[in-house]
Structures are given as C-alpha cells and as structure tokens.
Amino acid sequence: MTKTVQYCTCKVNLAGQNCHTVIYNEHNPVTWPEVQVLQALHGDENVMDVMPCGLGEVWPTEEKNRLISIYGFKVVEACFPGRAFRMDYVMTDDVSLPRYEDGKPSTVVAQGNGDDDEDDGEDEVARALANTEPVFKPAPRGRRTPLPPEHKDAG
Image (tube, rainbow, N blue to C red; front, side):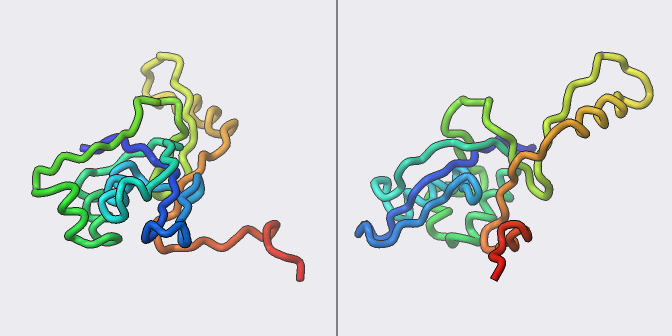
C-alpha cells in the first residue's frame, strides 16, 4: 500500500564546520524519511531550514531500500529498525503542496461531472490535461539530466 510522503528542502552542514554545506532545493528535494536519516547521520543541529515543498506516493519498503542504497544499512536500520519499521512520511499536515511522482511530471486532473458512462470520463480528463501544465518531478539521486537548449551557453 502506498503512502503519501512529503518532499522537503533543507541545508545539510557537513562535519559541523560551516565549510561544506549541501543544499537540497525544490529541484533536488529529499523525502521526509530521508531528512530523518540525514539528521541521524550528521546530527539534528546540522540539518537546517527544513521546509516541505511537495507531496508524492511511495511504497514503505521501496523507500527504505532506496535510503539503504544511498546511506548504507547501518544508519537507515538505526532510524527505521526491523521488518515492521515505523516511518513518518509527512512533516506537516499541509495538503496544498504540489504533487511529485515517479517516472513523469505530475499533472492536475479535473474531476468528472459525475456521469458514470462507459468511457469513465475520458473526454473530460483529456480536456483537463490539455489545459494543465506539468508539475515538477525530482530526478532520482545520482542521475543528472542535461539542460534544455535554451539554458546552454552560446559559446
């Protein structure tokens, strides 16, 4: 069963020296469980300015496995121990945040007008999708996407 997870922006002060800071912004956010792992790894005082920026859906075991692949088994297992682990998925109860989805940018889909005929409102959905703009979807960790041509330097 999927769970709703919040994506967050934050700053991580590596080694507590204020020399090396990693910034996770709206274009490279972390999930709320990942913030908890970062706090365990670097210390609560070194993970700063944590703000929710979007919502998405995750499978709990897939999220734990993703965190293990990034941060290692020991630190993730310390945060979320055992097979029946407890993981907080949301930082706040704010539901007005934009949607993030795996695979493709999320789009807002208008609800049908209540008629339950055979096409399940496909015409209404197609019209609603034609008038919407995609919502940002964060790229998976470690993979960088090339810049669009309008952002590249001329020289």
